[in-house]
Structures are given as C-alpha cells and as structure tokens.
Length: 57
Image (cartoon, rainbow, N blue to C red; front, side, top):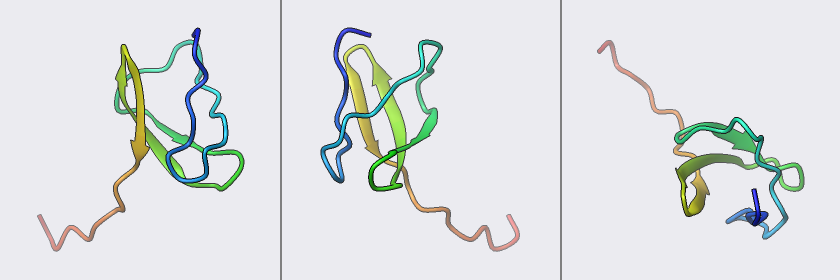
C-alpha cells in the first residue's frame, strides 16, 4: 500500500497487511484500539464497534 493510514484514536501509523480485506479488524500497536477497515480504495479505518449483548437472538 502506498499510504500508511493513521489510527483514528491516537494518530499512530497502522500497518495494514498486504492481504487485508474490507471489514477486517486490526489492533493499533500504539494504543491497543480495535479498528475496522471500512474501505480499501481509498483506505479508511474506523474504531470498531463494541460487542453488544445478543439477548438470545
């Protein structure tokens, strides 16, 4: 990848694997935040949603 994306939480550079896919979860090495790849072209990262309780669904 040409551009190294920044963590939306701490602005650290996030390493994206060459075989990354949309909706893949990554962890920021600096702050430990769980990030989701929203789009590959252009590359967009967002803070991954918190896991919610399922309540039997």
